[in-house]
Amino acid sequence: LFSAVAMAPRDPILGLNEQYAADPNPQKVNLGVGVYFDDNGKLPLLQCVQAAEKALMDTPTARGYLPIDGIAAYDNAVKALVFGADAEPVTSGRVATVQAIGGTGGLKIGADFLHKLNPNAKVLISDPSWENHRAIFQNAGFEVDTYAYYDAAKRGVNFDGMLQSLRSAAPGTIAVLHACCHNPTGYDITPAQWDQVIEVVKANNLVAFLDMAYQGFGHGIAEDGAVIGKFVAAGLNIFVSTSFSKSFSLYGERVGALSVVANDKEEAARVLSQLKIVIRTNYSNPPTHGGAVVAKVLTTPALRQQWEEELGAMRVRIKAMRQKLVDGLQAAGVQQDMSFMTQQIGMFSYSGLTKEQMLRLRSEFGVYGTDTGRICVAALNSQNVGYVCQAIAKVLQG
Ligand code: LMR
Image (cartoon, rainbow, N blue to C red; front, side, top):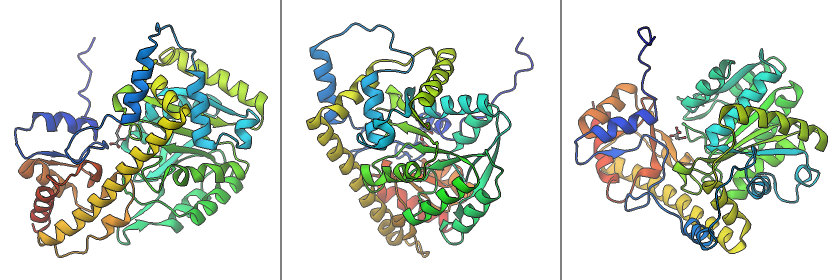
């Protein structure tokens, strides 16, 4: 039965964890996967999460099946967070939100639903994008292509190229857009540029699928979420996938969501009924714990406040690490101007290092980033940043 089964390649991101775990180098540093560690190199367990878990444990509840679309309080809290509790699409009931298995799950539910609607539509992802975007949409049955995004020479966004790619896309094309903290490059477009993208999406009848995995890691929760309001104001039917893996440091709980904005309440009910079929035929219904914790935090004012502060502290620490990285590289003798790393936003820096240089970083220094040159700045700390800078400097010096 399995004699013809080929060995699949390791996952370009999660596969690095396996390699890292097997590396005996005592100085090894994992800057591969997008995970935030605190300044002691520890994965944080947020205070707001601990408080919510304690409150949940104080009234122990049996674990029946959740509804197919998840915990109602969770879905409502996601709607309020993503669109604003008083936003018209929410109050008029034209947003269909389902709890999902992480942000990846939200993307997959949306992809499967879209494929049923229009199997011949093309999907455009940014060039480059999160590696899993292509795989998720391809596995849902779509042909996946790219729109221009990164300009290596300019170290920024090739915005004209991006607009041009979107302009030349056929109507119905699904454009996967990074709502904030672009993964992997760390370069976002400006609010004014978003307006231009929205104009093209509207004029060209494209379907915008916004991946919001890093809300709060850019400029703030509301600031990062503002782009969603822009799409809504333009009267567009959009898809938004949400992840709480990073913002709640709940990676292993797989807490995410998919929200779809329809034209009216009745249409949203029909969309929801189809999303439920996708969920039921994939994993039946979501797990309880993570969704209950996030709902508790988001709907309890004191915990919500605490969450905003804790997320704010993560954001500030990452920014400080960017500066330390740039200063440390200079101190380690790197001649080229690396200050672009402080202009990038979110968890990642697209370092500009080649695949060969990234492989050397790994084999000679135990410093793990992706082959594409992406490093997770959120995993740097006061203890390891100096070593990482020395390693990068040596690799850059050839
Ligand atoms: C990443 O890009 O490293 C994260 O989004 C984690 C993942 O699932 O790939």
